[in-house]
Image 1 (tube, one colour):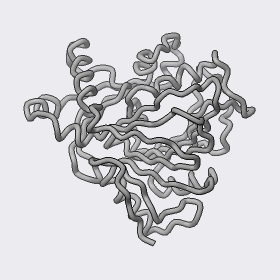
Image 2 (cartoon, one colour; image 1 turned 90 degrees about the vertical axis):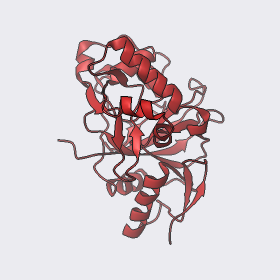
Image 3 (spheres, one colour; image 1 turned 120 degrees about the vertical axis):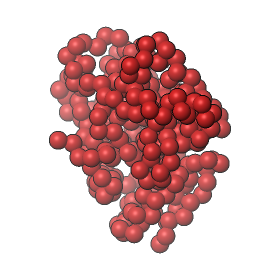
Length: 291
């Protein structure tokens, strides 16, 4: 069966039909899926019932090398509650199935997800696709928003395009966490994830379109005065997140939401996370295999 699409936004984002990850997926469907992602940047696959963690991971492995969950120093050496190291736990549930305590540092770390960002831009090996599965969702709130960074680049004045095309930006996970209010990070913790440098503009490998590569992790422009560089990054982020470039996804149980980190930015939106559980599991494809 061929994959078909239903538009969810005038510029990008679609619902995919004709692919069910709870069943075997052919090589032809994988190719169609990748082509759809290159065109649309964000896609939703609705499932009537949950597909398993093994199905989630095994499908994503067919798309490229996967990021593995890194337990940060700040949360100790406890194991992830999930069986696969390639599953990134972005929920608010502890290993015993209860809500994380309000003073748990994982909550403070997760608040950075409320800022506009791109997954893994703080590493030298960037993320390509992210696939987020909804196992438990709260009764209200917790939508996810996306910005089309290809359309945002296209809409820039030519003078701005010339200004930004060759600039390089330093990205740091600790910069975004500081913006979100997490200031008590030790030097040892910071050393677990050093900053990385990426072009402010790149050509998307699947579509050949130019893209603004921004994120809350973007600390400063290399070689520019700090304040001047951050002012430009803030200006570009404001431009890229105007309503005409933004799609808001309202979650349904068992949704699989897929996005291209080299073509979009995204952010979580708030909900009462001290009252309602949210079990979300993400796989993330990298540009190349980690050492």
